Image 1: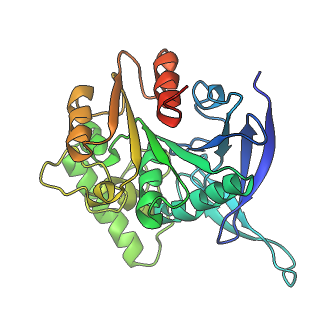
Image 2: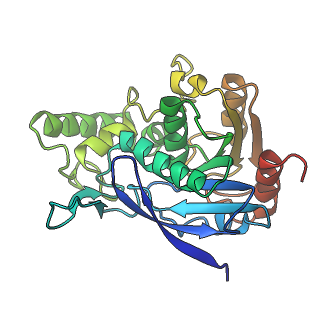
Image 3: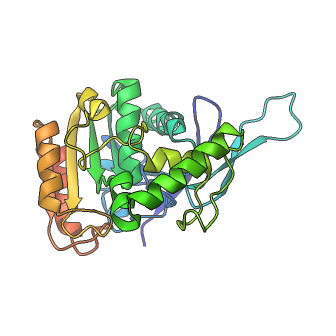
Length: 292
């Protein structure tokens, strides 16, 4: 059992996000944990909840991509009778809103007087973490940890085939053009677990801002990744079930694109790193505190 404090984060745009604070109240450093698509503050407990120690706290929070469909509340003004709500969750979130979510969590951590703040993203949380860093120039954050930064577009091509992806893309673009961006794609078009039109286009098209790790396309310039100048640790699962190619090839792509980053392949583990926790925790602790 891991003790924690329940917290509420208010983002710069006044949206309210629920979170869990693991570890000391006044730590030397905080790791802001950005969960993946459809996950939550409770996800990846085998890693996130094991990181706190006497000098380290972890702030795990529900970004607006938590679960499949969710309501997101906005802080009410004194003149409003009830809080404003928007549709969120993995099916409906707008990718660019991750900047507001992560900035709210970073602000919360720094409001506790912590100067050493790190961001750790898992899966789609990796794209969100790098996109935030691109937009905010890493302000207030010392480094970013990427755990299993898979390319969703590459995976879709591998598992569903280019023809089906293109057919779904055409259908989704038509919905957006008709002013229906949050209409879910029917199962006959796309059999994933609930993507609305704009979310599909963000996840599964090559020119989307979310396609930050285009290791499947040697001609594509990963400009967003290259723009982030801070310290970077990349942890890749040796048998990631969402990868479309061997881990060593993807790790090599990251080493080429970010030569200063530390890239580690954890062998014989899947996307959640189950069974490789010791290696992952050691790599993260060495990254956030080389003198430990």
